[in-house]
Length: 308
Image (cartoon, rainbow, N blue to C red):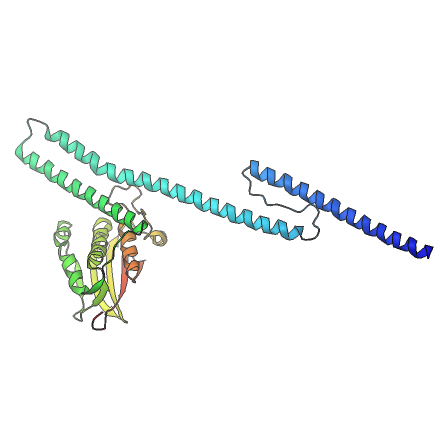
């Protein structure tokens, strides 16, 4: 009986020893994690938590905490990137708006010259008018994009003959192409392309494609619209000397422009708005560069059924 009692006491002593060791490990682990957490709180570090004496489920706890830290850091990285992009966008917009304003201010000052001839006055007024038109277009694009971002656009889709709208819109820019000393090649299918879109938004899309070509193109302007595989396919292409293959991944991004000096009349929003409008109306947008020719292709679903 006495031997059995001592055996029980021995077993209890061993168990108590094991528990004491585990308790010491837990305490050591907690102190270790506390020091690491305090270090991460004070310092901007890429380190993760480590286990000093992994016991029980503490290893899993450390792993879960590290996952949260990784997620937090990724969120901070994206936020920092977004803030940097935002600051760059504000800087770019300020430059884009300031450029025509500075030009207008200069010509207004020259108009105050009492010895200015009538011919020069007409010339300067013409330049001021064009700069105001550029500025108005920039502000319109900024306003449109702001409404898109705030989801305030009101779409009023209906069945329209896309080919007719396409042709009418291009015809409005005929004089602009003549000023560049060229005439665009326009191809519109004889088969009507009826599409279900907001007419004003569709016209705006085509205007943006044309203006992008006029600003960044160097020739060989081609515009087409045809039904294909149940879709209305719109294409705009032109030769270019500023767009490279490395630009294609960002070509639809807001405020992106291949003109790093931003000396051209562009906010970098035209193609971004065109793609967003297209997607909002159920369409698709893509672009590619082949042998120095830049092409934007938009696809809209055909409205084939009566009453649509």
